[in-house]
Length: 411
Ligand code: SAH
Ligand code: SF4
Image 1 (cartoon, helix red, strand yellow):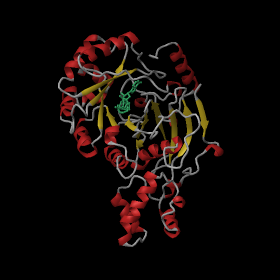
Image 2 (cartoon, helix red, strand yellow):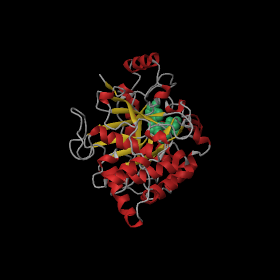
Image 3 (cartoon, protein in one colour):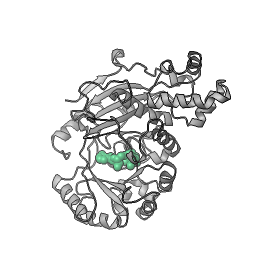
Image 4 (tube, helix red, strand yellow):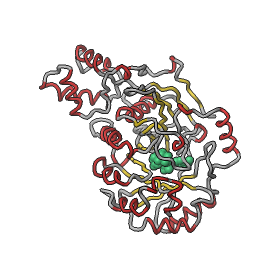
């Protein structure tokens, strides 16, 4: 049975819940570049010769030590810590709920205070432990403007883009909760990699289209990959896009992370229906952008995601066309068994069909792992995320459970 920890119970909350601190007009230091931190030091009267050193200290405390309270920064004088606390925020968001799947997958629902006018927003982040690695699936937006017909998030209107600190907060909270910062304990019984870091990889595959929030995603990922801080290698960060062609080259040039494309169909006619952004940027333009992706090589392949929809895109003809389409592009193909959600119009392909499809593309020289659905019991699998502002009605939850028991899923 999946476990749910109700973090609205004060005794279960982390030590520094955000309350509404970021709501009180204080600028947030998390997510600032070093130059912005230096400017922030100038703002509070730190003498010029000390600013760079102070910015480096803050960087270390925030990203190496995982501090979420200025009071812990004991290498900084008390006077300056108080000044910082008075003027800036580094508080974590409130964690409303933590769910733990039977397979060790964890899902956190976090609440971020309003930015400017508007309401607080709720965001889901998922941690997927595997042998030797731990992958964090991060959201870039609340809701999505796109309406891919098989995606649960796509049924929720865009509420807003997440800011760089909100994107980073998802990583910081996960590392807090998993004991992945120095001097923090891993919860007893947690399923995490046996050695080394608990979060080894991040994928921008949560809610939203990251390339429709390019600047904020870029800022956050450059902080996450900074070698003196969170230090995630860019090869262990994957950004998934439904195909926002104009931003694909910029992703390679300006962020330099690994690219995943939500392909799902090999003919424009079908892709127009499944991934409607295809009407704007058809397959020919998408493939051209992939061919030109900066840094592309056999060691740095593009991942093509392909959701297996029964009777829709899973024939051998589709597999052949897929191989033809990807010719000449260093690629991996990730087959994703469709994850059902209440009201979805599709079914997952039969297991034999998925295997036949995988065998064919494999025989044609492509690695074609079938993504094992993870955390389905807590609705944490691909495409099942939808923020709690539109929390599923109980009847829908029951309907979903019934669908899974009836074996509509692939596992
Ligand atoms: N918006 C981005 C990233 C988030 S979606 C994108 O579309 O790429 C992450 C992945 O999950 C995408 O490949 C998406 O197509 C896939 N997905 C969405 N709904 C799904 C579902 N119900 N079952 C399986 N995969 C799904
Ligand atoms: Fe948005 Fe991606 Fe879902 Fe499409 S698959 S609706 S782009 S989150």
